[in-house]
Length: 117
Image (tube, rainbow, N blue to C red; front, side, top):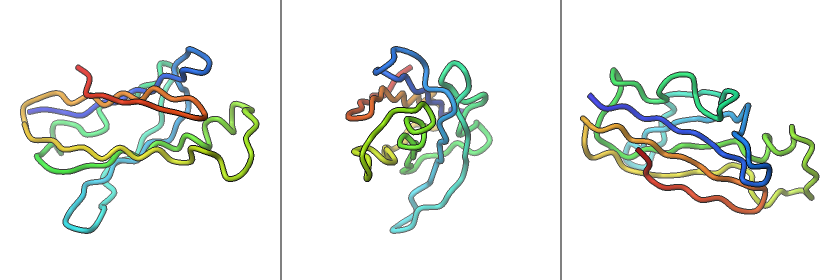
């Protein structure tokens, strides 16, 4: 069985993004169902897969990263509302046997993601 992981790198400081709240939702029709929540560790990763093998299945998902709160906690001054509040990445899982890795590279004013390994 496959599983889902993520990590976050703060490109402004060139370091892992520590203490970012992450929520995982499964998209079911027109509804979002919360299925997991985690916080990044000192390496910018979750301690365990955010979607472990036991829950891993084909479908559409969203990862929501609480980025505004992260930069606020770091003391980064921004005017309200912040340019990036929560970053939402919607993606699909179509192979129940693969490892899906969704990294996030972020600064207060931009981000990028890709399917990692």
